[in-house]
Image (tube, rainbow, N blue to C red; front, side, top):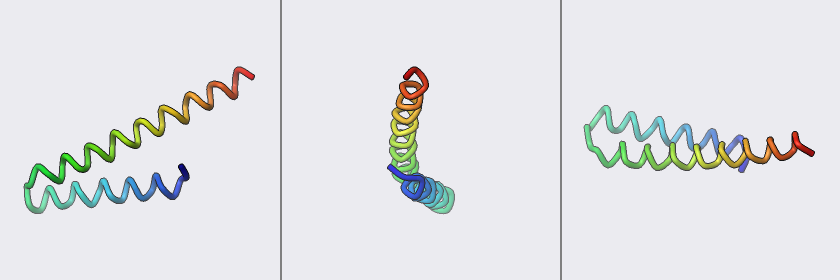
Length: 56
């Protein structure tokens, strides 16, 4: 995973939230939530890897 991919996720998240504000369709919020969950999993993995590096 790269910074570019994280930026794409953030762009996608913002797009879905804008669509939700424009049209009020809950489907857009659901998609945005899935993106946020993916980013949270990614960040958790990166933090665990960083902790492992610090203990070596």
